[in-house]
Image 1: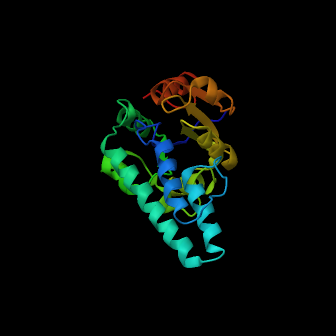
Image 2: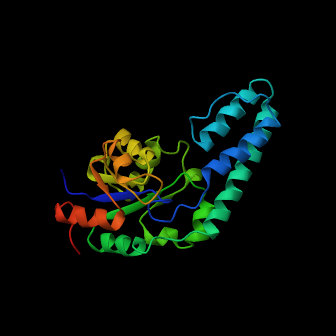
Image 3: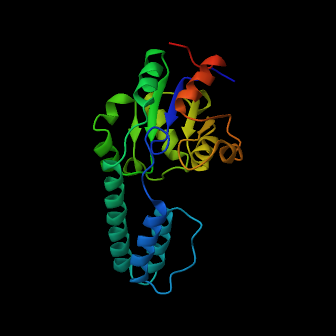
Length: 225
């Protein structure tokens, strides 16, 4: 493997404690959706953001204004839950230390998230200062696992995908990295165990980001600062 010039991190569950109750979010969204479309189409196998887009498209086929209203109300519900969760969240103890250490050793960093920027800034007001790039879902047309999210971050910090590592706590993050042609790493600080993450065949798996950096230093892929 090549030396790693940049590491792009997911946020929730990777750099910060995961406090968003996605099951409750889906429950509330479905309750709202039932007021617009009853019965709701069976589409339970996709994340909340994609589910909202799908139902909005179904509504818009007959009534574009109704689809827009549904989409707006759902996004408001999601953002409200995200900001509330951020108020109860916190960065992992190792987060600032490893970001600073990577910067000092010459490795560029970035953070990409499907979360809303207002929620992340509620938790970390200086998010733009602790890494070289921060992109929320509002900053891209296509959020991860679409590779655009990762490509845009890499473009901002000036590193190619083949010389970068995508790190996250979910198979979606690993898929994002693979689709972009980057190296990938899974960390078990979210809802997935090490064994569950291994099923997505990342290049590296660790209990947390601190352990991951130690592994990369041992392999000589990043410099030990």
